[in-house]
Amino acid sequence: EAQVTQNPRYLITVTGKKLTVTCSQNMNHEYMSWYRQDPGLGLRQIYYSMNVEVTDKGDVPEGYKVSRKEKRNFPLILESPSPNQTSLYFCASSPFPTSGGPTDTQYFGPGTRLTVL
Amino acid sequence: AQSVSQHNHHVILSEAASLELGCNYSYGGTVNLFWYVQYPGQHLQLLLKYFSGDPLVKGIKGFEAEFIKSKFSFNLRKPSVQWSDTAEYFCAVNLISSGSARQLTFGSGTQLTVLP
Image 1: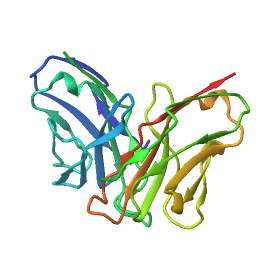
Image 2: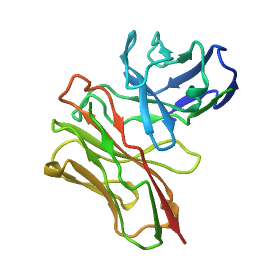
Image 3: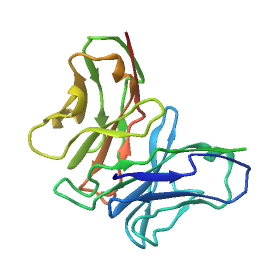
Image 4: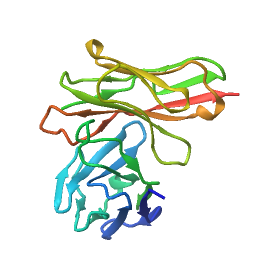
């Protein structure tokens, strides 16, 4: 089954304790992206990656890091989490440019609810 | 920077009522447009998308949207809603003629509640 998986689904941590949220897709998609969803703000893009070893900042990259060493994986790293990073995080993937343009239909993971105390 | 506005934050309808959710974006370049739906406790799913061609786009579950370039709008419609349409709806825009062509910008979402 084609899917995007994220782990963990729920995480409660404390300020300053480094954490990693994993994202993996089995569709051989080139493009992967991380979003955070906050009430009233919709989804905001954190980082995206066009392919292995190619990453770029989205709208709200501060406090986050990513890496893309393999095509299927795109982990999100919070080196020193703070309470303002409490949010619902979604990973997404899509094929690289088709006739539709650079970001074709994105397939979203189930989300990771992060609470930073 | 591009922005996407969804002016209706919460819409409450009775079953069988008609639905129209507004979406406006701020940039005049070439765009790809999407509507995603998020059912309670689930992840986002694509409802429909517009890349080019016929500005009236039909999606899944009886939804459609019309791209009106002169109004920078991409409103979502459904002639008769069902209780199962209760969800949050997000409009998203990808500017394919700008330096940030690989970013997807979402609106803040509209919560639709359909009363049985």
